[in-house]
Image (cartoon, rainbow, N blue to C red; front, side, top):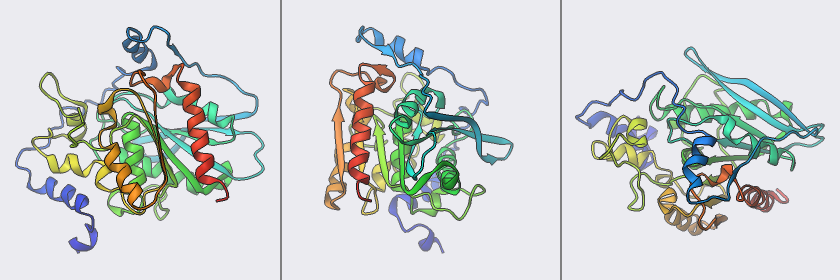
Length: 331
């Protein structure tokens, strides 16, 4: 039974790590209080010193975009999880679905931070979704994975309503959201990470990944995640264990542990902060081994939060659009 359930080595590590680690999993990060420390404005203030030319990308209105907010896609316990939809009005054909996951160290951030990106892509013909998910103030890994896979299943279940082509589902994210997007993209065929209770029976496979400055490995030599020397790191809050206490779990939560022949085409959009894309080159090597298409675009001298700011926003949108048009042409 166990062999059937845990065919993947990394999945086995996840199971074993929960069983054999002697120290108790810490729940101190589950405060039940929303962490609002990471916002577009706080990111702007942090990035401004080295980049005085930047400006926050504002939301915009377009009469050709239909916006529907606060749709409940899953209820887990008493928690209702919502998403927003930005879609071209009067679409006559099924479109590419673009799901954008916000960042914030798996602890902060908000789905509204990427409304401008969703609006910009909807104006180009994509049906865009911005789901929320449980952060580490509410629940530990893999709750966020369960939530976001439920969002994918909901989108597929409601594809006809929103004119979505279920063979053209894109999962995207920034920072922690980029890591989650990559993780969802490489584990679509793994029941272990599906969760249960919301549109069960529908697969969560996706057809393309867009990772915007999200790590590919929590244990790679390039990573900076897991340094608890000054304060508890974002990863330690999310896993409930430090990297030293449970390296197996940190490894099993890394997208790099699962990349393989079933991984979809992947776009990497990166800042000049190398540690934010730890494991990327190893990930791409595996993609190349299986002749899976990928692109990398690096914005030189850009801060980590570049997707929120001009002058990088429009080039980012164009890279995303160009990549997806290549991937889905004639599909």
